[in-house]
Structures are given as structure tokens and as C-alpha cells.
Image (tube, rainbow, N blue to C red; front, side):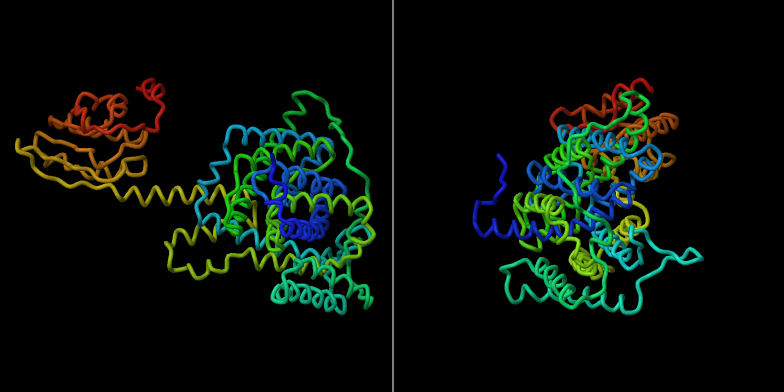
Length: 523
């Protein structure tokens, strides 16, 4: 049923397994860091990364995409955990998953196609900057419990001196290996080689630098089934529902945009509706096994693709390797230097950022450039979901404004001496003002024809504009004729309905975006 091993080729299996191992190594510090952000135990983040990664890899709609605990979701749940506790978080994650399942069942994932390309570019660039800025936290000094150290004045203490030089050297070494190793051979993922070389060098030379184990211990057992210990009543629903809705939307937006990004990188096409369903099942399972929830991860997905992972086996391998780290390999994984993983993520930033977008400045409409920059900035300073929603709204407004100016009319005199306005362009809410300005009521003859053959009446505002035009001509004591309106338009018109000339052969047939019952009731 599921294409777990793409084409069952040994080469694909090797690539998927090795890339899965690489991703798992990069997942550990991310999951722990996001757990700290959400004020939950590190294992809550690690269990989310394992369960979500496994379930989404098996039943999701985008092979090769990595799912796990993410910062976008972690930021949303902080207030819930602080105010009500972790049990309410688990309940919210379950409800979040159920909402996402409904999105998949009702095939709402297709609406991701409404995201314009400038918004997508802004999302990618903004997320690259977010990943970069997140790595700056690793340059902060921490105590034995992973808390950031501050001085007497409350200022953050940063890594300096020899420790900074060692960390910088490991970052540069890691980035150099990832960049140059593929030029020698592609038998092994360069990211995996970089992690191994950086770790061995640190141990061999006894370098004094922070490791994964300095963040927190990742040792633990198998996740166990745990139904949230919360009252099953309306009060609980009122508490968790707002968080669940926001988490579901944030998770789906980031997951579906990541799906589009992976589609571009692999030149294949994922299944948005199936991904919504898969993300929902993954989050529901995570909430039932003590995880914090999450969504698709851009950084880890790019690491997977760049390392050769293409099939579902890569995501499954990453999840299983992560579980093995928790169960038996924690002592080894905890020795990986943080600097090495920072170098890996810096290369993700380089690979994620759309550098070509700089070349487009001045070559594409200024509005598109502004939208891309706005989405990137909002992603960095506020929230991914808000950024995408604002970007779509801005794009829609720009589109409406540009098309509003396209409506115009050519005029002529018919054989009866009447004036004919032949409309061109769409008539909708943004163009009704231009529509009204086209007509010269005072100087028009007593007989006026408005021909809609080359126009289209799109919405309620357009219908109202036609009715207002009819009222204005009637007040002037002039005869108005409307030609080539669809049957639906004729049915919705009130004042101008009797002025329409019906031509069964030539009149167009289309639907107007208006609620007929509401329109009639309003009249």
C-alpha cells in the first residue's frame, strides 16, 4: 500500500538509510531545544520527533519530507503549559491532530495552491533567517542544567576566548566537509561524514567545547500510551480548543509549504490532502504517547534531500535511529559537539535561502518584491502562519487593485441613434468605482445600451453596481438596455432586471459569487 522503499533498488535503500541516520543526528538537539522553548521535559520533544517522524513518513503525502517537534508549534504552546500544565498540552495535541485529519478528509490541503510565488519565496527566505538566528542560541553560555547564564546586570553571557575559536573552527570544518566532500565521492552523505569527522576530531584532540550531552540527557525508554489526565468536560475544551486550532493551522501551513519546497527540490509532486491527514494522525498519536506535537521540518527535510533521501524509508529510518539513540545510544550521541550541528544548520541556511531572489529585484513588479520582503520579515519577527496569511492577503489586494483598473468601455452609436457602451474587463468589488465613472449620464442620449459581452459580472458588489447604474439612468428619465448578461445575473438584479435584453444563443452562462437567498432577503 505504501511505497516505503522507492522502486526497491539497493542504491535507494542505502541512500535512504544513511540520510535517515544523518537526519536523526541533527534531530536530537533540535527536539531538545524546542522542548526547552515549550517548557517541557527533553524526552517530550524527542518522543514527538520519533512518533511524528515515523507516522508521517508511513502515511503522509510527501516521501522524503521529515516531520518532528518544531519551533513554530513550541512557541504556541508555551502559555498553555505554563498556565495549565503538560497534561492539557497532550489533550491539545490530540485535538490538533483531529482537526488536521478533518482538513485531509475534506480535501482542504488543495488551498495551499492559493499561496502566490512571492509569498512562498518570502516564506523560504524568512525561514532560512529563522534557522540562522536559532543557531545563535548555541553561542550563549549555559549552566549544568542547560539554562542560559547572565551577568549581574541580567545581560546574556556569550561564548568567548578559546572556546569561541574552537567552536568557530569546528563550524568551518563541518561546512567545508559538507561542501567539498561530494566533489570527491557521493557514496556517503557529506553531512553524515562531517558529523562523524567533527566528533572524532573533538574527542581525539580533547577539544573543550559544548556537546549534545551538555544540553540535556537524551536517555529514556519506549514511549508509553498515556491518555491525558484532564477533566473530560466543556471547560477543558474551552481551554485547549483555541490552542489546538492555532497549532493545527500553523502546523499545516508550515507542512504544506515545506511539501512545496521539497517538490521543487526533487522535481516531483506530493499529495497535500494526504499530508494533512498524515500530519493529523501523527499528532493524534503523539498526544496519546506523551509528545509535544509538531509538523514538517524545513531544515531536516533539506538535509534529507541533500543527503540522498527520497523515499519513505528515509523518514522511517530517521525515526527509528532517533529511538535507538534514546534507548541505547545516548552516551555516544551526547558526545557530538554542538558546533558541528551548528555548522550543519548553517549549510541548511545556505541551501534554503533563495539567493536568486536578489537578482529579481527591479525585474519583477515592485509589489511582488515588497510582498516577499514583508513575508520574510514577519516570519522572523512574529510568526510563520501570520506571515503567510498576511502575504496572501497583500497579494489578493494587489491583484484586485491591478485588475480593477482593467475595466473600460468603447462607445459607438447604433442605427437607432442610441449610445452603446461595450464593456471590457471584469466587474467585481474593486472595479465598481471605475465602472461607475465610465458613463456620462448628463450627456448621454435618451437611449443607452450597456453590452457585457466582453465583461464578466463576478460578485455581489458588481450586481449592486449595475442596479445603481440603472437607478441613475431612470432618475435622468433615460432608457437603459443591458445585453449579454448571464441568467444568474438577471435573476439577481432587482432594479435593472427588467432592462436586460435576453439572447438565448449569445448570453453567457456562469455563476456569480453571491448567496442568492441572502441577496433576495436583503432586497
